[in-house]
Length: 242
Image (cartoon, helix red, strand yellow):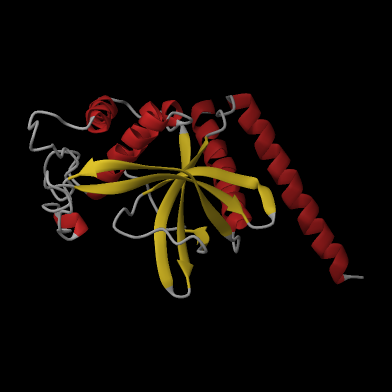
């Protein structure tokens, strides 16, 4: 009986907190700034996802940019995220204004990648690039960097066996993520941007989930929420007779 009660309380409190979060983001504008930009070898010519871009180099491959962004709330310095791109086919627009995409739901495969590799990718250029490739692959393709609509395992004709080490690292991240059991470590926030009617890359940021309270704490939170509701109702009633 106590277990059922606790589940009901947890659901009520969680719903209240989620509702508060949605209100906090409502109408908030964000700006995005590239904090780091690198390039990586990619087989864009035969990648249907990128529209078969013509190769510009002798080894039959193109270079694609990999950037890491910081998202900041306009007029609210406390709302900041490190963000990764999830739309590599769209150019980033420097002056774009971003808002939260409330319809975004992170795939389980993407969540597994974040839980196993995100924290280790921060402030490490090689890890960041590899994480970005792995994220693009999971979000937009078949989880295989060497085939499908997005191909990143491009090689130099002079050394056909060579593969960009970033791709190898990204592949290891994909393997580790695939075997991971989700623990719901992060909240996921997607940002969509536009400037002068032109779309900018969609960006994905995360925040760490707060530890779940124990059963007794849930009950205390429920009582607290009930008291807040009671005070609100009494105030409204008093105002009617004023």
